[in-house]
Length: 334
Image 1 (cartoon, one colour):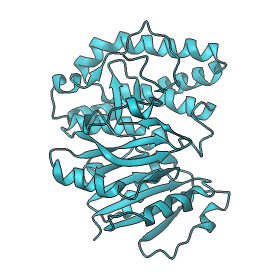
Image 2: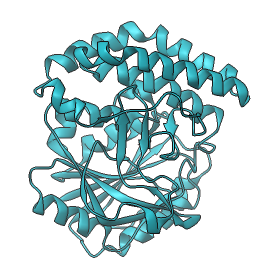
Image 3: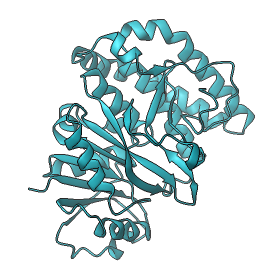
């Protein structure tokens, strides 16, 4: 059995798949399998993939199940003790997987791992050094678009991992049910990190595990209507499902204010209609999310204080100049 199962999701990925696979061919750590899930692509990109690789399994999905469903499908076929999720627009350094595995072996007290992500098209800028979460439910990638020389360069604990290049213990992924497929894509990794945190799992940022990430290459860009809708809807669902009762009641006014600020900013930038639709659908499905919440909170093993220690304060007086749904810079949180 391989030690690591690398899962890649393709939806009309074009040449990205082969570029990503070529980067995996150069990995110094070799004890892995690759599972490529094709989410009903229509651009013929799957036909361009060299399926003769002995460690590659291609799983065609009859429908597009999104990033969440695609990874869940891939995980069902995985044989490794670890699941390494890698976007097809994220290209790892040759020792990326080696450093993730070394981090897991050196820090057995941690259960999932985040990579050091550079912007592929502007490698002097960071794409992120782990995910952070605020008390109002807003999430962002630490050091996003910060100059690389000024970004965090020390490994250590973070709230969660950006699933563009992350590694999870397979048993934990399965125990939590994997990604919530209702999310389709965007914020599903924050939701999973929160659920893992609630059962006592911890995330480690491995500074030496480097990837170069384009970001939303097949989703129309980070500011597309699709990305805005998914992010704004799924952020509400994550808060409703995962925030412990005591912390929810204490910070609910901050969450409501955050949503009001998002809507105001969306109206100012021409995204008002899609933002209103996202919030309407979030509220419409709230009873379903609250049913999920019951099971999540019943399984919780950590105290409110343990979660609160990792929730940062999002100052409401700061201007919203970042991506709706997922923060782009740290200026709003300093």
